[in-house]
Length: 189
Image (cartoon, rainbow, N blue to C red):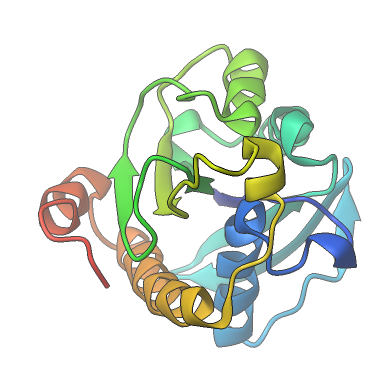
């Protein structure tokens, strides 16, 4: 069993905001597999599909970004999911829009959602795909990440999301570390 988590904030007011790219990836991935987020458990919205007889859970924590780790920990405990079978998709201010980066471990880099995951799981060693949202130092960080993408930015983001979905699918059949070597070298969609 694997757990793929997209980070974001619940509610219509957060749709298409920079902080919600994790939710957007999972929405598009679910649509590709013709499934919908209809189940709730432990303050998380989720759905499942099978790949090579393995159950894949797509999870959107509904606890707001800063408490995402609490929801993830409950799912991992309930379903007996190993840390090696967790993949987190999230936004990253330090990566330019149009780019992404795969990581198998590392610090939160100031991302409050990741800080909570580290606190709840007692480790920084979990797989993640960081999606660049750029950074505008002239706008307060909180306002920036909760701001919406422009039409031009949405077009760039859409290409990245398609590539990330392709990588997620590939990671279900291939070693994540090999994929890091393959995609981190040239990661513009």
